[in-house]
Figure 1 (cartoon, each protein chain N blue to C red):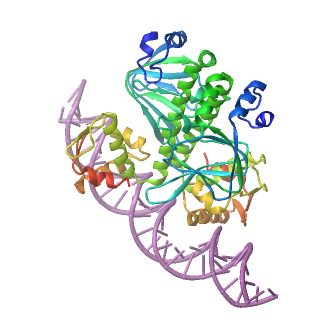
Figure 2: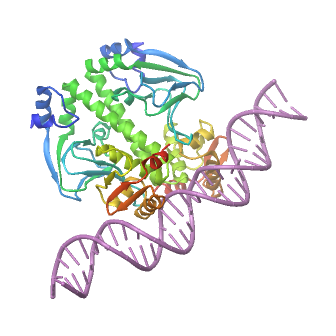
Figure 3: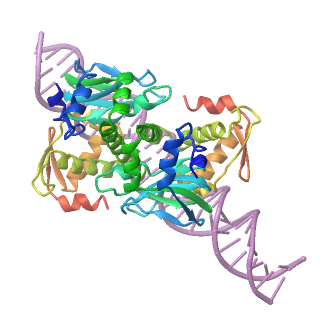
Length: 225
Length: 225
DNA sequence: CGTAGGGTTGAGGTTAATCAAGTATGGTGG
DNA sequence: CCACCATACTTGATTAACCTCAACCCTACG
């Protein structure tokens, strides 16, 4: 396991000893598609790195509506912050979007690891900082933009993540059901559908099932600025 | 200076040696009311603890509208996360809301401090985790609530911060101009004003200048659930 | 007394949620 | 292969929230 941990961005480049230390507390966990990993308000037990599969982190409003904060792809971590809260209560819930394998680091033992290795602590700081930035952008985006703007922004980010250039004729594949995407963008499937159609009507892109072809990249990007 | 640092929640209870280490890199900085501390996109130079005064952290939308993410009160820190970003670019801007004194920790020297003291690193992790939680709540609140809900929530948080009980006849003092509050709640002064009036019409509270008297605490709290 | 800034109010338009109904799509059992 | 159903998605009509713009009020202050 130690060497395997180095494959994850969060741990890559760490010394052998650090990796061994991490491995000594790591536990592999499996979740079926749709299975709950933890629920908002419950005690945080530790943090997770996704080895295979995909996880959604979400909050539920008082009225019962679900809003997805993040979709965690294989290779990335989540729930780091929870282990540092005084009452270690999770501020959100997590559920496997597909059959998923995670590497789990139990809270108390992992806190001890952090105290012992400043290299690992620094990685953790970097990882948490990434979350802060992401959420800062999220807050900015949510409060300042329309659904249309958020959707275009999502497509742009998606293209970077899949490492394709965002230009005319580029074809993007929506990797999650549209209703999940709608929740991710803070809206509902109906509005999502209509927004996609509007962009299509304007000739900016073409939708076919779950693939989207960019027809006018500069036109789309103009909407972000 | 070392002993003085222990007054801040972030550093309280640290050993003498850690405090000395911190003090050796700390620098006191002064900002006039309205003065910019840093601007989104610029390189992060370090992180700050507010000794006196108040600071707003905000983002500006493409259309030029400002949205305040946080108001940092005396005693609290901000911009921790920025020093860990690869390109260390600030994801938001900061400006003094009044004459302000900060304790500034330069990035490179502070990173060295973190490597040397795991106690300080753990404090830093705790502090960043606090930001993650705050922003998670913010995202939840922004996307799931109406202005009315956010306003009531703000009043509730304000009462906790000023350590008064949130019940009938409680008088709260808005400690920032209403237009700042509007921005903090992700709206504009007009809507803010109307929302306040609506709550008043419903007999839930009474507004006089910048003080608010709670008339029906349970009625207000019902709106959050 | 005039002006400026913060705040409030009104009319009108836009965005997006809700409710209700319709159209694929993809199994599953016969 | 087809009838059936469940689920995902789409579309339309209606409604509520809230932003925009424009005007107005009030207090402070020269």
